[in-house]
Image (cartoon, rainbow, N blue to C red; front, top):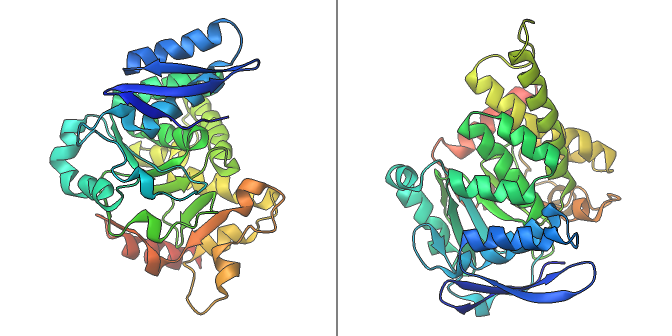
Length: 333
């Protein structure tokens, strides 16, 4: 169970944590103290490492660590104006080093906290991601993460893992927010997908979505397979080349395959065609397009919402809509 966190003093996060036997209040004033809190909660066997990490890091980042130190962290500026919604009001952006990202994409990055004052904002670097993954991943997922040597693939895994365990909104640093998320996210949605094939540079989800879990299982297997090929004399199998390996092992192509597999298993067979095959058309039935999984046996899938192209709250530096059009055209052949 996740409890609301609050800032009890500058840089001090107060939150309640639920173990198997009790609920107690904890405080932390740094990432190091958060890591120590996870170790303390797991030492006595009251919580698993994953369960402890989920509660501690969700509390820390939901209030941006009680730090208002832009541009890396920003507390929600208008928390009193929020209404209940299932997707947590946390924005995540990942980068190798914050300084390089801000120099390259500073304008795009700033639009996320400017357009969304009711959201906590976090720009995480490699060290942040490593710390988060260590607290949130299963033993097998952590081993796969450590096998990956490229920062891009580690970021692929980290974004999905953070959304599965804590939830929120993820965006690449070169994606610009063009309108507030509150104008396009239904309060009852458990996941919001941008229709038309663009699924990985912007992701929005409540914790526990099976699409995210399925992708991590598949990515872990693919990473282990690639590692075994690299350590043997056998000819390389699977992906070939830097970009292809990123896309097909941990990135958007792998994610689409995982989504296709799990959506069929959970009575959401229209998802692949409606979301990853082509963009929804305004003339089609709105409910059938917007909520393609409402008859699923899984409650998280029932709340999956497809956002039509015309309502996209973002603009990607690489021409978001043109890329979606090309993907849609190629999928028809």
